Length: 200
Image 1 (cartoon, rainbow, N blue to C red):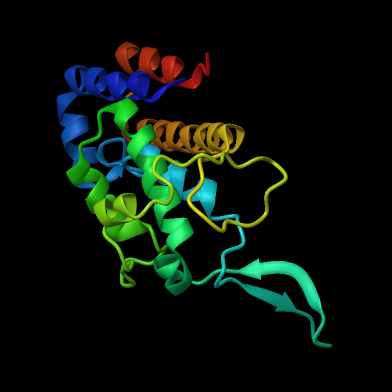
Image 2: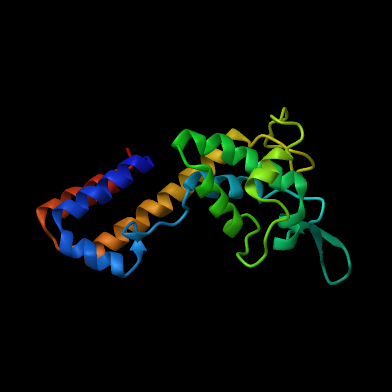
């Protein structure tokens, strides 16, 4: 089920039970005053690139000093790696345009989320990262065999879709939890619950 359906359900819910909606908004519940993964396209782009080894990533070692094949990437690394920043920025410029997400909202999300830590800023703004993509537009699309990110690349479509499906499912379940916790058992709410629970 796509995000438009989730949004429509939230609006419909508000017209059915305004007092309850007003209450849950004050509680900052998901779907009612609190919107996680906002914008979804930005969060999915981030997660689609965070699994790759960057030039500043550190390989994990066991107690004997042997490499374990796992890499650790710090917020500072994310914030200074040109390949990561430009790839995420290009991904957002394409994917968020499909949802008509304004550049100002992309920039705000970027500043707070791109390094994985709100107090550690990236070396480039969203616009600067996009301008520094090399090449622009990117010509290489990541595949399932890639493990490292060394230059501006196009997101792997399968990875992006998988992340989108996971985050959408989590978001849908969070809204359902909000409804079940605070909504009265009226027929209107029952319809909304059933509609949201149906993944088709």
